[in-house]
Length: 80
Image (cartoon, rainbow, N blue to C red; front, side, top):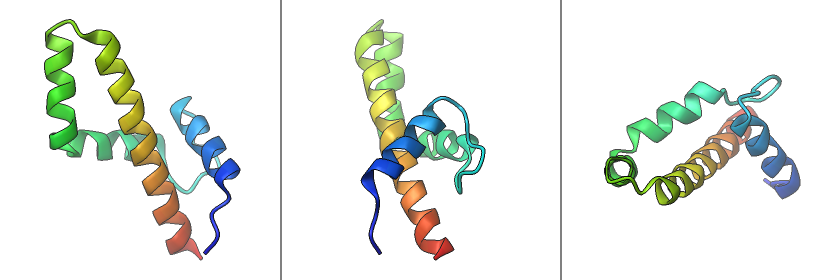
């Protein structure tokens, strides 16, 4: 299966804005996948508690991107 990288990036951006209309993945599913990833979330929470907000924000955005991308690819493969 061929992945259109531009469409995938646009879908991730749309999800990041909280707009999941017409997408195979919902915003809350991405957030849930992030929360379930304890290995990634624990250091982020520790950074927030230590006032390393800039780094934590960057890592949250990176985690959101990777989870959204993975879920969108998985949903598209299941849909086809």
